[in-house]
Amino acid sequence: MKEITIIGAGLTGLLLSILLGRQGYSVQIYERNKDPQHSFGKRGKSINLTLCKRGINALEKAGLGEEIQKLWVPVYGRCLHLNDSPLEIQPYGNYHEALYSISRQELNALLLSVAQKTPGVSIVFGLKCVGYDLSRSTIFLINEHQYRTELPFTTLIAADGIHSAIRSQMQRNFGFNYSQFYSKHVNKELTIPTENAKEYKLKQSYIHIWPRNYFMIIAFPNRDGSFTCTLQLPADDNSISFRTLNSESEMLYHFRKLFPDAISLMPKLVEEFFQNPEIPMMTVRCSPWYIEDKILLIGDAAHGIWPSYGQGANASFEDCEVLNNCMEQHPDNILASFIEFQEKRKTNVNTIADLSENHFNEIRHLVVDPNFLLRKKLERKMNLLFPSEYFSLYSRIAFTTIPYKQAVKLESFYSGVIDELLKYQKIILDPDSNASEKLIYKTYKKHLTNNKDIT
Image 1 (cartoon, rainbow, N blue to C red):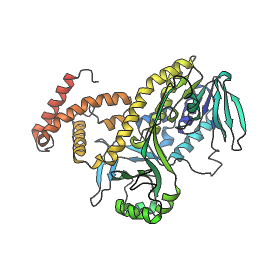
Image 2 (image 1 turned 180 degrees about the horizontal axis):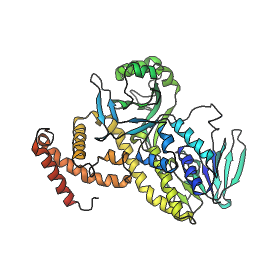
Image 3 (image 1 turned 30 degrees about the vertical axis):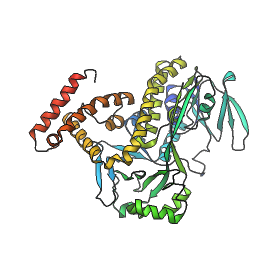
Image 4 (image 1 turned 90 degrees about the vertical axis):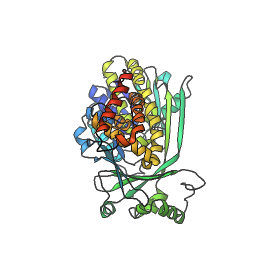
């Protein structure tokens, strides 16, 4: 059997192992943490994920379609909690489009259970990879007592996350390009218990957002009726930041000013604020992702992105599906698989990295901007008139599998249509105007004629 060694039993490493195991590979995974099924150690990242079509497609290819549905909660839009204003609902689309809120731990547990039952896949916990020797095709691992061992590999795939030890060593190679960019903001997990969510009638069918310009709370629903929240604040700032909110009185004072309606939802706010870790947001770009036919980076190890677009796990799952397809098409040529994988994915993940940074600003600021909301209203109207042709950029990213780069290329065309139509706001947004649809249709067709390469 062809042998593959994977570093990391997170979401990416586990899904890839299932796909490759089903293809007939012998897969050995090494994971630094203890087996979560038999340990109760410190939790890692736990803020919920939102799965979309891209990630779901990859999970379905691994045979997890039915099982995954038991773990998620569908959400059909954003519910904005604005100061001194009624709740505002912003649906994702016209046709009941949904994202799927899911616990990272529960998803990881499902993937782990399936991987352990997949023929050809084995997992060793409690061994941290700290490097490799390419000349001897050997990896170096240490256990919790810092005992070091060396093990051989044939082909090594690094799915060891944004702080990848394998990538760190690759950075020393001549010709390896690397950059990282931290957001000034970091995340902290908070919770809204089931009883509080029910008492305040917090709807589970939406992601709830408290946007306050430089500060924000986002709440993701869970199956038990509770919500897992992420609080986003600057890490270090002279005014309001995690550094300056260093006492209970200071923190509560600013929370009452910024999020007065959210405090009553969180009975453990003080405890969670001071005890839960701060999770940074970092964009990672690097190349090349591979060394010969020996080593490959995948997922966050190759392309870490900010979580604001909800595409981190989805992009990594899509990685797994694309790599699996490449290896199916080149069963006897690992190097060809690696080259094709990078060609198909690198420009696309660079694109979603840019979009994620831009979208972070959109959620905090633009969701309450009248001009932004007007564009979104017109986009939904365009989608109603051209349901099989027109999709907003967000819809192309979240609800289709159009490559990220192509989705952005299409946006330059569609945004031109919207820009022109906004010159005639009174006509196009008048629900009783017969001229509205005619103007939209005429403008759209004119732009389509002038951009014949749009498909």
